[in-house]
Image 1 (cartoon, rainbow, N blue to C red):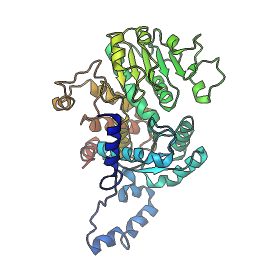
Image 2 (tube, helix red, strand yellow):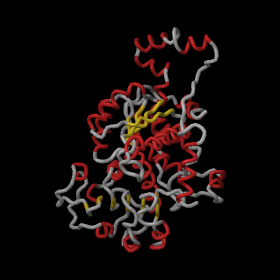
Image 3 (cartoon, helix red, strand yellow):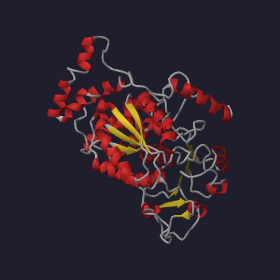
Image 4 (cartoon, rainbow, N blue to C red):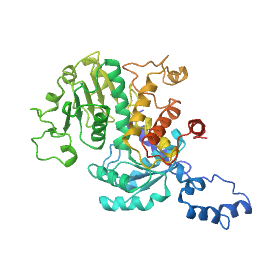
Length: 423
């Protein structure tokens, strides 16, 4: 199917029947006068008074505990850039649909007409009582860093900018397993990150949490290596400057063990891949056209391990592997925030799942006889039915152990809730 055909089909998909992709449905009986008297006046006064007396009762009597706001201002939408809040709405509705499909979480999109950080933070803070969590989405850097930091500090519900941390969790799972295959130690590998936006910064910070050494990480932006000699860097980029006497990506990648590309198509060539260390990991995530194609990277050297953001090649790095289950785990224990321990728990759970035997029916769905952990199967497939029951509990337990949960994690009870989450 060519691009024009796909676009026409997508327009029809969104327009036919009820416009858009989500709707709101009642969850309680509403057929009789008595039903309505319980749902609204006078019966609704009972839960109102209970919540007024004990604020935590809001989780017992309302949807709050299973409701996430998908919030954007439309300043960095997919590959479309700054298209504004209205044009961003189809993407946010799609995110809500994915929350429901993969983790049973109800989500509602909120498009805010504000590019000023203070205005945006104030708007989200004021609507926060409605929700059990806030998923920030498609907000441009560097504002996204300050927005998330402020909201995490000021709210008592989990807040996560998925473009940052969702990507970081999946990339980290791929890195964990690539190092497992190659027998390399994370504190010894040389890592090159091409791109210095929200995802790149979050991934690099998570590499450090995994044990990577700062002096073995080199970041590049559109002007070359982010060095301490440059005077055009914002505070976030300055966090990752290097003193290496190099200025180009080509120089930086020579001898590197890991390349993470969250940048633009075609910046990596076969010669550069050949200059890397043995069994290198190349994560070329620019979409739809990666920094180097899967075929070109594989042709450059047989021992390279390749991940992309595309569905038509092995090792697709897709945030759907992360955010539904991170929020599911956070909501299940009423976490006050999503912290580093919870993100690391998600990454390790994904990595461990990929090393287990894969159900035959899942392999069949992808048109192969079997899926076996290795260079072409580093991370689980999006439709793996085990993701919900593996990743979400790992996140929930990490929330409890790190002290940000409001209630304990009762595994048998929560496992049953996870199994029925999408029903």
